[in-house]
Image (cartoon, helix red, strand yellow):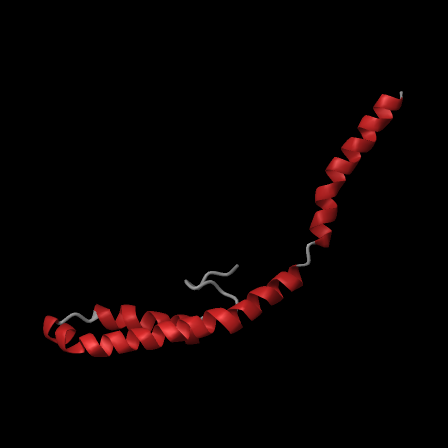
Length: 98
């Protein structure tokens, strides 16, 4: 009899733990961390990549102009600028949501 009670209590605790963990995980705090991380780290980093890409694009402009290659501006300047200025706060770098 004691063994059955022990097994029932152990199984109840095992199956109740994931339910309690779901309630304890705080979604707003996770979203806050994502927003703050994006605002403080990702946006300045993509701004730096945009400025570095614009510099590289300006230096290589004479070569790409004569080669008629317009994709260099898109890759080096437009893509990072869109990730910096038009992407929603907390979205992934490719515009995906969490």
